[in-house]
Length: 153
Image (cartoon, rainbow, N blue to C red; front, side, top):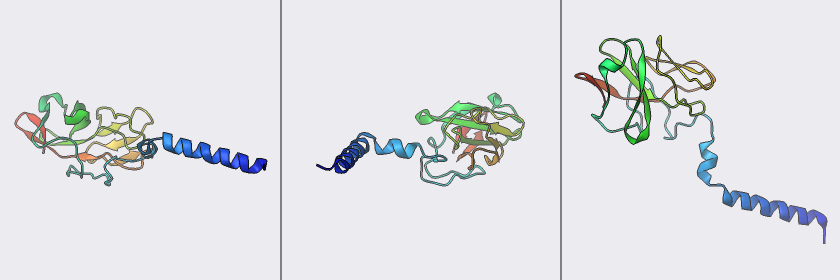
């Protein structure tokens, strides 16, 4: 028997075994910059497709979100949302998952949201990339101030 064809069969069988053993979700979950929703990240506070949570759910007391800063809060479904307080009455919110490699971003400070893992920076007012390595902005989550609470809309 030809040694070359034994190696080819062996390599082919190993490749098939690996392909069957690795779940397809594992391969796609490793792609850089994926939002997991199949939608392009949006900015400016509009509700993107597949946004986190349900309408009217209170996220945090407005008093707990410092003006010019913000807070990272729990949202329905185990998600984290970063809430930035732009002014006394205006807030913006974004998925707290950095689009670069999925780390949680830190609370906003001085108008900037920073990812502690690799240093990506995003504008607190619009979620846009200010500094990479991230190449896409944070995914907007629609919120509003309702009384003394920040709620999902």
